[in-house]
Length: 121
Ligand code: HEC
Image (cartoon, rainbow, N blue to C red; front, side):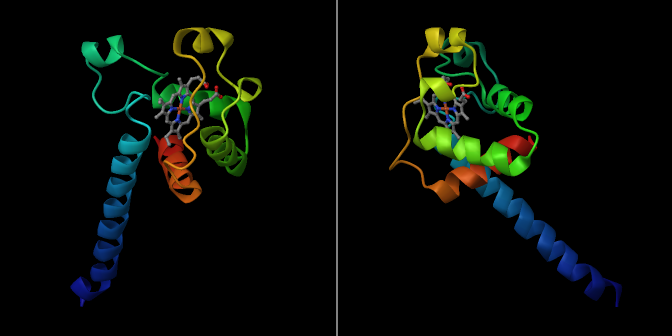
């Protein structure tokens, strides 16, 4: 009897874990080449092309209180980055330049999933 009660829970958990694994891969594929993810190494830090993803979620969390606004900002910025929308300070632009638009490289739905993932980390 007990096993029957637990079964749905086990299935649900593995589905959720599976899903978050996929989003992690997606995020690494679409954002990880510039936004530092995973294990930090000296080489990665020396070759950084953008602030690490956690710095990016931090500026977004400081700017917005509402989660939907945070996600909308990330979606919009990823598709249409512009200097006047930047939350990072001017020194970020000096060091890395402005992010190139990823329009056509990642869908809005994918960015939403990635944004959720980043904000949860
Ligand atoms: C080709 C390199 C590159 C890729 C790929 C990239 N970014 Fe960026 N991103 C940058 C750089 C450089 C900055 C810092 C300058 C800026 O803010 O525009 C940045 C900044 C950001 C910011 C903060 C903008 C601000 O200043 O408020 C967000 C949000 C962001 N990226 C989201 C993403 C997401 C989500 C992905 C993956 C879907 C991604 N980026 C992929 C280069 C990249």
